Length: 217
Image (cartoon, rainbow, N blue to C red; front, top):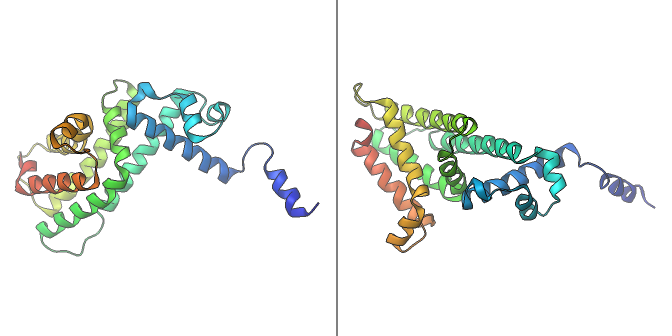
């Protein structure tokens, strides 16, 4: 028997290597995020995550212990994903005018959100939970949006009298409202609320609202 075959067989026995563990745990978290985004936290179970990921229930328990551990890991993953989206959206710009910069951020937001809408759908479900962990995780999201609004302040100077806390909430309403109203939006438009073209139209409309003074209030 060759050394390569021996090595391959040896690696297939026992726990996965460190890199394999990290990748597999990430896959399980993504499966959990998808389940929550599609059906809420009540639809999440260790068994369904195992089925969706094509692994044993024991492996899910090995990584996360129980449902609470899986939710904690999923919350943290979504926090990182959303922070990365916003970091990409308001990265450095070489444009001078406020209008051009907002337009640039709008295009970046469309490019980032369309393939990653699942994380905002997860946030919509998280926003309806009333427990400390959800509150802590949502506070991280609030801070992320707050940094975005502060960036808009620098791009387009806004009145000092404006209520900055509510300006952040207004942006969150614009972002998560479609998640919470998804069925009714689809009924009225006759199209899926998260089709790429619908997302583009929505973000463009949101951009016009921001430029015309929504954040002045």
